[in-house]
Amino acid sequence: MDFLDDNSQVAVITPDKDIISDADTLNPAYIVFDNYEIILKWNRSLRFALAVCTLKEKIKNEL
Image 1: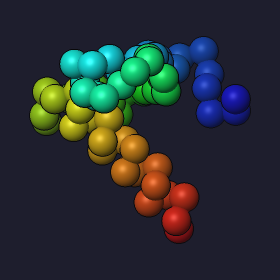
Image 2: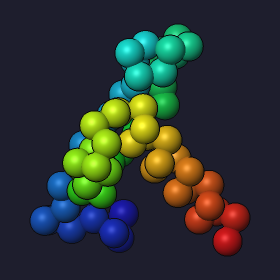
Image 3: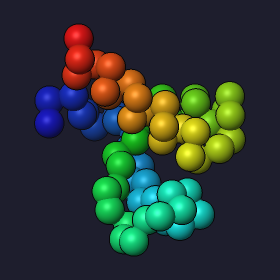
Image 4: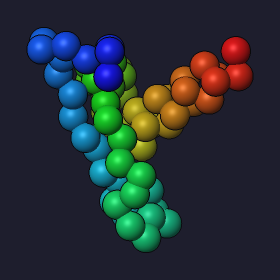
């Protein structure tokens, strides 16, 4: 992946029933970057942060 370098900090988020109530498995998993932490500083809801990131990708794909 060209956008990752030695200084990139990433985390893998695997939603469970506490975040997505109808989740049967821990799929999909999300790879998140520093922007996820910035969203969580504004609103500590994990569900909200995943929704913002998912919406951003949908908008980006439509442009």
